Image (cartoon, one colour):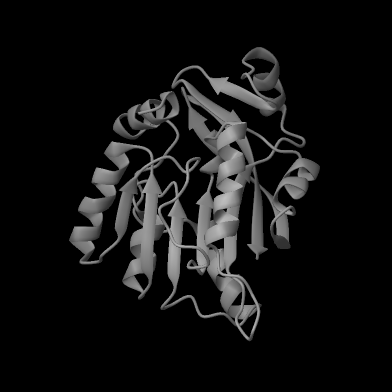
Length: 234
């Protein structure tokens, strides 16, 4: 397992950032609502890829409403928890232990919906390049009466966050706009709005982009976390 994989394995065994919740994230549910209301797109009966599927919060929900779901997760501990929860729910999800910054064993033009809920932030630049190209390869393309596939991305935002500014200065990573959370040995990448748009618009149409602020408790301190919430289409 990679260094990042080991860091995530320790995190799921002794959580400091992730929660133990089993229901799907509210940001993901808002994305589904957008697809149904604004795009007139049914989210049932689809082929879905959940990148960084964690303990299965989104994957199990989607399988339960009638989708064929693949979940890729680097942490063995998280995969075990996700599989146990799927069994308890009586749903079938194809959970795969792997790195989302490596090539996916998935056919071209075969996936309707891709989720990346604060997962690709942990990729290095090489892995991020593969991740973008692989999503583009496997996501269904529009044409001949068929609607192109959709992606939901939640990524860490750099703009206006003093905590991020401090981390980039005091605990910088090796690559651009990365910092290291030393307590768990995890490297994270943050994005300015311009960098985010430039990166994803190479391959996808950005249908919606907004910034969201939330707060998390870490080492008995409250930290502000800002995110980009993006709805993309091929």
